[in-house]
Length: 85
Image (cartoon, rainbow, N blue to C red; front, side):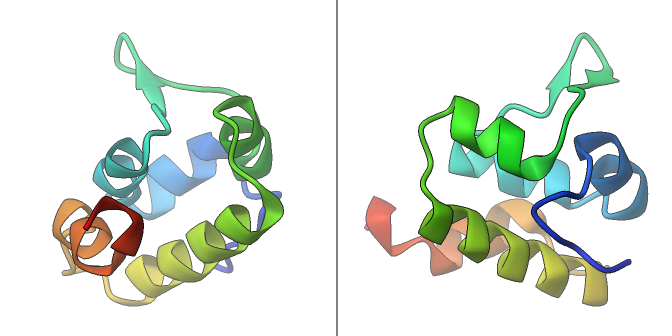
């Protein structure tokens, strides 16, 4: 799957299961009551106050997770998120 800022949250959850934990660590809740949030990655991030640079990082990180399906999204987000250090 090619990840872009226009990728829908529903597609991310379906195609990249580790994206759920990654996005939650980043502060973007992507599932409510077991159902994915509707809209794009960009829309979800902007709703939480993230800027374009943050969104570009999310796209890059999520592409890594898509390309490496055995990677744990939560551990990956914590490992590379220097804002939380």
